[in-house]
Image 1 (tube, rainbow, N blue to C red):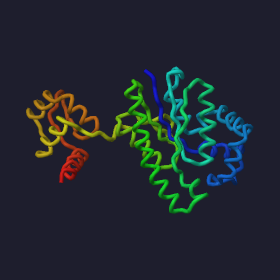
Image 2: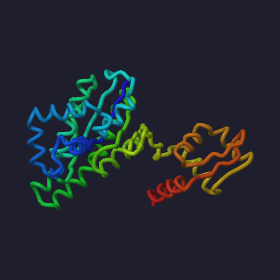
Image 3: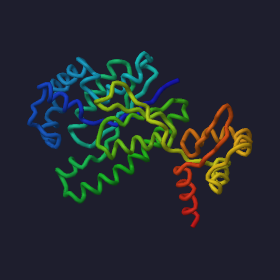
Image 4: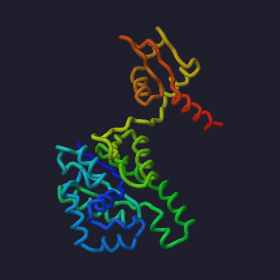
Length: 275
């Protein structure tokens, strides 16, 4: 099956290059003029690409997670959507990472640029920059969901990688993955392995909602009533349990079904929508 990886990109490449003496430490991420000069210089691009190639796991947070997940897989079957902020520093990092990936046979897409505040603040006032940033996060979520659904409908397995980037963009990336039920993977610099985040969000529908309402009136059901409900609604209850909307307790067989606080909150949300 083909894979589509949506990756939120930060500036870890620049930060690691600074630690290694490739880029002067006194240059700030907000120094847009400096990063634009590097971006416009092919020699600097190649120098940073050589730096990444030395140790892609160590020198790029985005590659550190991505390369671990796709290890031993065929690059020709993997597509990468690497997006980031509308800043020259982020564009520099994305340009280098994309070049690295393309040389290894991965298909990468022209990235989407999200307002990162710094670029707008350089040319406009702070109020405009803040408004653009807020609007950008909302548009980002919508765009990621659209792209992912399109790929899912085309038969791809879609992954979301929210390791890099501004915190708001990381949240939007993870949320898109949760809403779609896709795999979301992450790696903190202190971790030794990639972590696949549990599926935290699911919108029950149809019969699942009716089951939640039935359990809500009692908070939990047990004994023969629980085992009988499980036998008749096994698939729906397993899905509700997977997303922690109910808890199934068993000892050789299901003997208790309890609605969780998350399940109660969902039903409360439904009621408020109807009011």
